[in-house]
Image 1 (cartoon, rainbow, N blue to C red):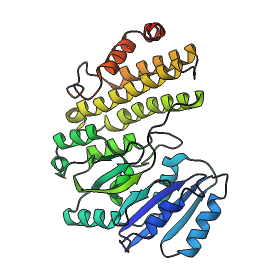
Image 2 (image 1 turned 90 degrees about the vertical axis):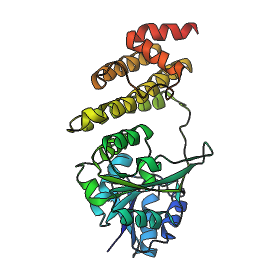
Image 3 (image 1 turned 30 degrees about the vertical axis):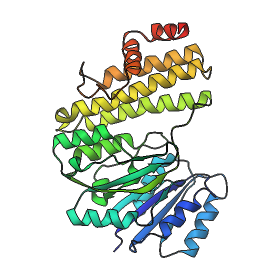
Image 4 (image 1 turned 30 degrees about the horizontal axis):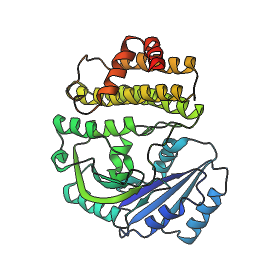
Length: 329
């Protein structure tokens, strides 16, 4: 029986995927399958994936999508081919420790956990991060669920019970950035138990980069808006929502803050026009009032910078005035 299926979406990653694939092939966990999904690459990525499958047919499953689905859609395709008891995700330009999936699986079986998390090293920021501390592990109650939502995290540092992922319906939004935000919140809100391995077992290559073009600002701001809507749309339907509402709304407030900063910075850097930045700010404001129902949030203090809080308050009152005031700074 396959213990862990690891799904890796790839688009135009013919060369950058090699390190991740080799790290997965060297895993100390023997009963593992590696599902590599080609997301309509325009280079020779698919040929490279097929070559890997031919060399390692007992480990690698190659899956092709002729239509670009984005990382989320490619992961959904990979899930359909997964047979593992647990499912993990790896980005094609990152690198897991060779012991990662054995340690995560052993911990999962030890406690029959719905999912297990580990620490990771962010190469861009040269920092070590553990999103699931001991105090939030074990059987989950609403206090722990709220803590996990506030801590946040990423799917690639975790493994999940296959049945848990299947139960979410369509796990990931397609053709989107931040496509795992609502998925993780739903998992945090519905999983019964979580374990952790307090070791750095994953090496994350990318950190948030600069907004170098109009397309970057448009794409990122739009993705933030869609993520806010998706988080609320998926989690607010749960019977337990009111008990974790403050935590969920705090996450959306963080996204709201990121979106405002993105739009303002894009405007000041002359990546977008005044009219474009204003429309982004207006849409962020509309979305905020749609998904955040409480006037006060107990988690904000000390977690969002005062300068960002002032921008949020100003945009709540008037995006037009906010953008005009920014010009005078």
